[in-house]
Amino acid sequence: MAWRAQLSRNLKELRIHLCQVSPSSASTRDFIRSNYKDLKTLNPKFPILIRECSGIEPRIWARYQYGIEKSVALDGLTEGQITKKVEELVKDGANISASTAS
Image 1 (spheres, rainbow, N blue to C red):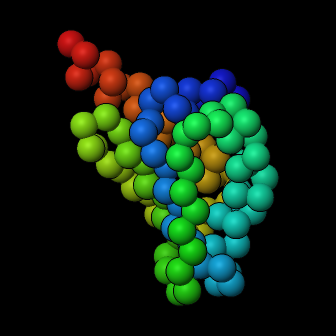
Image 2 (cartoon, rainbow, N blue to C red; image 1 turned 120 degrees about the horizontal axis):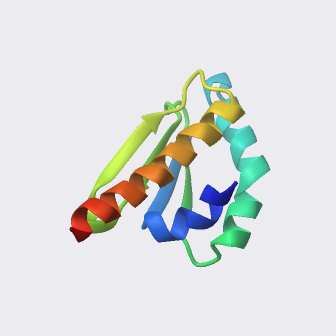
């Protein structure tokens, strides 16, 4: 859970792309319903962008310092697996910050 508070320190932006109705985006919609409020409470000024588009494959994008971006496909993942992927993206941000500081 500590990674949630690190979101705004390790990332510049988090974007979630999903379809409003497709079954492949169901877990992504569940993740947003379950986690958005907590993430925004812990990181009130951090941009968490939800982008809905009909028929799109669910995907999460993390933007780090210096314009570095990483994305992860979310199709077929459970809500718990999506949470783990976001946690990994946040931890990757700490590694990027550390490697550019040296």
